[in-house]
Image (cartoon, rainbow, N blue to C red):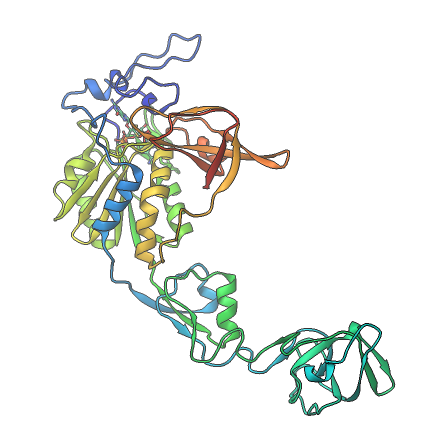
Amino acid sequence: MSNGSTPPEGCAASGPPEGSAASGAPNPQPGEPGPPPRHPAKAEAPGFREPFPAEGLPTVAEARRRILAAAGQPPLAVEELPLAAALGRVLAKPVYAPEDVPAFHRATVDGYAVRSQDLRGIAPGRPVRLQVVGRVLVGRAAAVRVEPGQAVAVPTGGMLPPGADCVVMFEHTTREGSWLLVHRFAGPGDNVIARGEDAAAGLALLTPGRRLGPAELGALAGAGVTRVPVTRPPRVALLLTGDEIVPPERTPAPGQIRDINGVALAAALRQDGAQPLEPVYVPDEPAAFREALRRALQQADLVLISGGSSVGERDLTAQLAAELEPPGVILHGVALKPGKPTLFAMAGRKPVFGLPGNPVSALVVYRLLVRPVVFRWLGLEPPAGPGPRIRARLETALRRPAGREEYVPVALLWRGGEYAARPQPRKSGLITALTGAQGLVHLPMAIDELPAGAEVEVIPW
Ligand SMILES: Nc1nc2c(c(=O)[nH]1)N[C@H]1C(S)=C(S)[C@@H](COP(=O)(O)OP(=O)(O)OC[C@H]3O[C@@H](n4cnc5c(N)ncnc54)[C@H](O)[C@@H]3O)O[C@H]1N2
Ligand code: MOO
């Protein structure tokens, strides 16, 4: 919720350097005189405090640590779902295989089931001769036993007949009437999936904290587990603050804009497996804001407030967060672009985020700081390591803003056998900076500039 500041050019690469942003000077387009400021800048507004210290704000890693430490481990609510409804959900309890999968030794090729001992004399030009004593039909129990010197024809997926310990491929044999000439050796277990090799009865098939994807659901089905215990998705309240914000379906009056963050954050939440509640539009008025926050805390497991996280006189998030039940505000301000004014509080055991109103900031902060909390509320095991990265070559140089690390949206283009990372506009008020982006390039505090042509690791978006 803006207190009427000039466009937040402090967030743009071409904007004034950190510290001078408080001048709030409008940024005219080239060749234009530039519009007069519609409102006083945040820095000039009555009641404006120097927003955030130039130094001493936590880094993203530090903020994430503090947020997760304060958030703790929530008690997870569990529900049981049929497999068809469980895609993307997180397993809440271990699932043990009720039976061996497969339940019988099974051929993986079309060929002949034999005893590998019988094949020991095979040499080039010296096949072993075995007697074919029958065949196995797929989907039927194997009736014939393989005795020394014998072979039984078996199809892919067919049961290995008793007595045999391997299968020789059809193409490594020749037939002479009821005799089989085997030209290539096969050892015990070759071309066979052993009973219980996919899942052994009584052992854990899947452990809790695993997101259920196609393979997990398939494994459960294969073991005859048709209902699974999964965590109930956290309910997340979305408060969209700002007198200027109207729902997307309304026509904005002069000075108003349509809500972007309600839809974008709800989509991010849904994509991650959480359950966003109906967005609530909150005016810049303390009593209404307080009431909206009270209801949100009643209804939801997590609360996201969009806008008003800065420190202008009408940026109410911090003021109202100060009234929350202990421990209250954990941090306000992160050395991050975009996303400096981020706020995190715990109202008792409920996490509350104050996200910057700028859509790119809101989504980047969601990705970096909110998602880890959502994942914990889903019961997801935190990923080991930094997560997957895409190697790319930077198309144009990037300079880090003073005092903040930056995450720059980039488009990835396949060029001459490698990806080129093309930086997108660095104005956090432009949602289209993200619409063509496939990832983020990180400029950590230790790097002031990445030259054009630098090899970078892109964080998938
Ligand atoms: N003098 C200073 N002004 C500003 C500073 C600063 O350091 N000194 N920081 C700038 C930065 S960086 C950001 S980010 C914003 C964050 O401000 P708030 O979190 O208080 O957000 P608002 O002022 O409410 O909104 C910012 C911007 O985003 C628009 N907005 C808000 N909600 C939505 C929504 N749901 N959908 C689409 N757009 C939204 C809002 O109208 C503003 O244009 O502060 C800078 N100012
Ligand atoms: O850079 Mo602001 O911090 O756009 O979020």
